[in-house]
Image 1 (tube, one colour):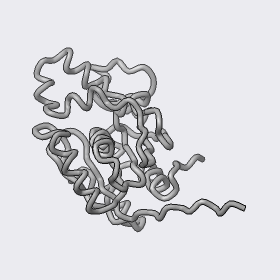
Image 2 (spheres, rainbow, N blue to C red):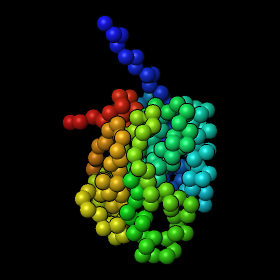
Image 3 (cartoon, rainbow, N blue to C red):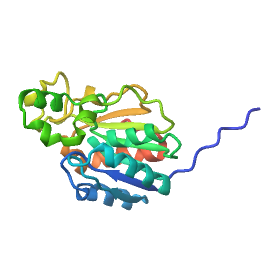
Image 4 (cartoon, one colour):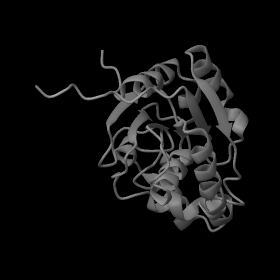
Length: 214
């Protein structure tokens, strides 16, 4: 008989990344819920416009190398996290939860930049990553995405979404090949940060590597 596969230990340290135009404080509510569930959350702050991925990615790689934590990331933060793991595949991150991250590229960002010249300055150094996204996920970490479907936001004015969206990001933009799991909850893009359902699903994925189905 072959021995049963050994389960990798659950990491209790979780690095949280915020999204575009947001401060680290935007992750405090989510961090508090993870803490109440027995995790040790640490918020990673970065300048999403003035510095963008060029500065945030190497800083995050160093933070993950030092901590060995899992990751929960909102919006642009999910792209930053995956880029960091692509650049440093030796970093031992077990699981990543992305909240409303446009992993396949943001139609709202592309549409805004096409229709409104000042938009380039608004997105700053993060514009290229937001537009392009990533092709697929082939790294060692298990990646799960929680997408929202409450269409409250201005993204629809510029993107012309087909199908469900959270007001900023289309559900289809979050469905990246290679994901370990994907789930949709009733929340808007910013509402994902204060959604009890999103927290419960994030905890389930961090513990089990899959989301819970009713």
